Length: 508
Image (cartoon, rainbow, N blue to C red; front, side, top):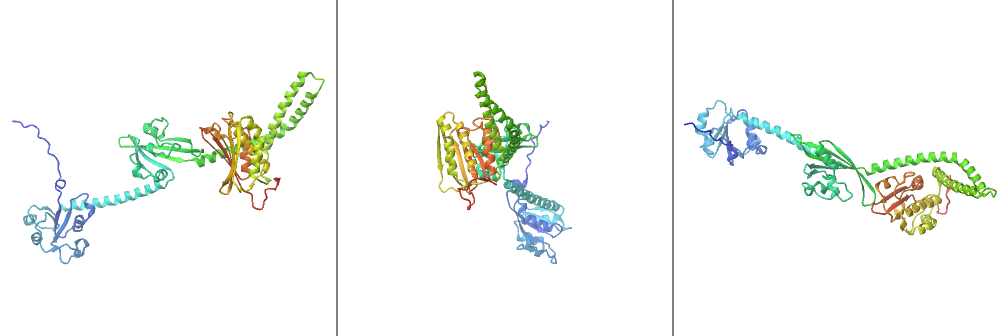
């Protein structure tokens, strides 16, 4: 009869099956004695071996100095293994390190059920000790490297998140926790969409957006990046750069994505401001050249056209055409004057201006235009405003430009408010309208010369304001929202205490 194939025997380990403590007796002090003591007493071996306790040691040479070993403190020493076994009949593991000892005699004398590890097999325990020591050293180095990496990542002033392929947060750095005001335990395991602090905060991942860096890295297995531009709650534009890096598993599949997000607002605003300043400087040089080249022939042509328009012996139609020429040349003269004003350096002008008086003059100069478009003008001034370092006539002209720009943004009527207060050591002067709002392009380019977009068809008006204010040591800021409204703010330097508000602006 042929027997069928037998079922394979289930592999088992005695140490796994028996959850008991081993009471160890050591016989002899041969090679490996110190290692055996460390294995029995050392906590680092509990991960690999069951609990062990040293019952006693037999057969040590009386002249051996090792009885003073710290690991032998409190451990009874016996002259023979027979005495050891007699005093500790519950020993269940015997380690023999005595060379030349007959294992049969030792086995016969051992307590019933005890196991024997002789001096030949003890090298396995020595090898285990060496492996554990190496592993402990490696673990310490890994722990050190982990702490170092965590410290570096946490000190980076950017958002860093490890996100699984399913879009769940696996880990994140302290910068995100600080911004959201939450603990790591609250966010790990949540959707990466929960890492946003508000509607003006770009998402770390958006599975529905084909341009999302997280999604691109997940699908292509390559690095991706993106620039986000959003309107902040304060009406200012904020700029973020997001980078994503795929992490592949052993099979080459993308299992996680590391997402870095950097707030580059300050740098981007500085670059935009530098570009605008360069354009303004270029236009200033070009304006000066063209104005001087065109002014003389333009004035001559304008004079002749006026004479022709007044000549009685010319036909009526000829005089009408001459009048049209006069009107167009007059418009060109006004544009030329604007060019000259733009090109004129103001760094040599010294003076002080009263903010309240400048606002009042600008309102009166703009009132007829505002009333013609059903736009109301409101003024709000803080008390005790200091005078500012500025030419009074130029400050009035800057405010007139801002008010006219705001009125132009209200074709259906509305309200323009002029207010002034303190902003730290500076004087803050703001012109706000209730208009149709600004797009991102409007907000970025409204101070560029001749920019036309939305409400910002300002020619040199706003560029002139920016140039003049900065020449006097101030700053200009624009904020707005697509839903409506815009505010243009001048930050001006207070005048020195010894300068009085009645001092006129004079050229140095």
